[in-house]
Image (tube, rainbow, N blue to C red; front, side, top):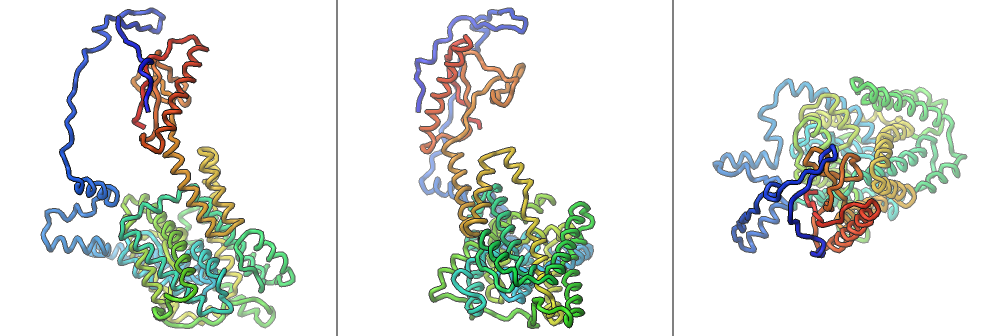
Length: 591
């Protein structure tokens, strides 16, 4: 790429400046321009190809230089630092105090009151036995408390990953006709999700999840939340026969085609508890100090609804309940992993998709609260922690888990100081598994539906969509593509659309970088975009162009064509306004 040299003319003779009063002052050449100086640029030290490659790979995969703490240390100190690096519990445990324990106990019990009903509800969302949701709220939090680095991440099942797993597996295997095979595939998908996540962390590929932009995530989460909420109309209306599809039109059609199955008793009680849960959520949003109101509301609703059904069971018939839940600890499930047969590819695909979703949510939540408390969360270590947690969980009757935003927000507001809050929560779940399972026998399905609807409503961030519309129309288009893709095609394809739009947007910015004409801010040495700063003025005889990206093979032709177009447009403007012709083009590459 080049610019014709005949556009640059010789600047000989005195320089002329025009003052604010209109007087023209002539300045001799020796005063206007300092004498030309030659600066020698030293060449970099010669390096071999291996050294260059090692340096480049280090910059790509180890930008934080994780081994710098090990330099010039004794072997004993290196061992201690190694344990702290791989097991963060060794870093904070020596300084743990009773004051921290008090805060963690309060927050742990608070999130346990939310995790127990949500665990049961999300397992139903994944078409799994409700007890699996409680299993998944026991073992994974314990593992994360040893390996995780986030102080506020509350681990357990989440709605989006549960929905995607249930959708993808149900397309090939019926959970009602083949419950054992379905459970095997769910556990195997969890194992592959963990293996995928841990591999990304081990290979230092944490940057790969950044391809999902904020705009596409807003649209995807909103679309998935709408589908999850509509699916819960089955439990809220007492419908027995319901579609397994996850698109908007089939779900709504199924609701209205089975009007004869609607139970007015179920609707009245379900809607009443839903209003109660939404009211408590609004109270906590408007008054953050009352966070415990929305945190305790789901468990309180489960208790109240169960008591209500027990009292009315002789008068009200046809209300669906959870039924029998087995007592005891998580049974081992290593022998149930499905590593051969015709459904292996389905398990791998489901595992990778749910792994991406749960990983994105978990790391985003961890980084959010780390920013609020001014500490760092290592994305690669978090990937390994979440991955190993899911791999171990698949061997102990757990399905995909990650950090939940709703529970983590409650954990943060309750004053959690360390990951011990996860241990306290797991202990509360353990007590429930050992002694309280018979109490859930008469828990109605409509309360689980109400809990899920209340939880997923928080995923619909319409204010973020409005901001996208105001700031960047292309981002808003990406948001709507992923949102409509989830609603009308499917959740997995909606995720694929979200990733595809994000990558396309990245390529668009790289291959079509922004260019702008710069002008000088009067009385300063600052140059800004003429279209954005009204006070900026053109420099006579100079065209200053800003190129907001590096120049290389993918965008060189575009930049050349764009510069020539800028020159043509500038010449037309000069001719129209009778100004001085262009004598020099300056490219500002600092952007």
